[in-house]
Image (cartoon, rainbow, N blue to C red):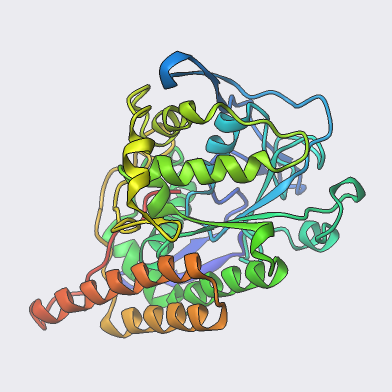
Length: 366
């Protein structure tokens, strides 16, 4: 649930964002009395077909106990995409910390959360401690990261759509809205981006109990099927959670992330040879977004930062890496630092009179 945030617009007028809606733009809303209401929706899952194909079908309840897993992300980092990937891989429904779709622990494969960001549900997270799932606990984590350079604007895009009664994942905020939001909210949002990752890494310190994925990796044309294969293997370890046949995993990725149907059965095998320490070489910097109906935003594509703000992002990323000695996490964070240093170089090469004082990528992926 978003708290009201006021910030000055480019023309000096105050723009007030008072939102009571899920940060993934899935149509869930809060009534004036605080009741969360969700319109009926079909989540896509898949049935394996010969030769690595798959067929999209609606998700269903498992009908038996399943071992739930947290999927935690800062808003604007692809949580909804991962929601659909999980359902596509398992055939079972997922849920979230607000119980938006009415599914309870034990009856959903994963639980989407943005906590400790202000979008999260503190009470739910406090009540569900690590431990035996049969005792109402959640003992495993999927942590989804995205470069804050892109995640923060993506979060603004969601706010802008809600404030203007636009369809979710349809419109990017205009540049003047970005400047107003950036100048008022940047320090808070980069702090919450880092605190989110730190919270979940501390809560699940055992690497065997967690899987770290990046939005950039999941949406990469070469590496995406490989990383979704990692997701499938991790889900398969959960009690009562079956996954689709491995040869159909690339098809699920194509259908959910790229909406291209059955084109990738051979891709995972081809790209697996690029794996180095669990990460494909050169992957993690893709600007591609899931080109399915949940991420077709149009409009402003580049959201500038000041050079000082780029330095703040780099410092927070490096400090996060130094605090947590995790190889895969380090690779993802290094790719973010490299990308941000590239942006800094472009800023310095640009005219010193450039309005906004910096260059950055638009965030339109969640």
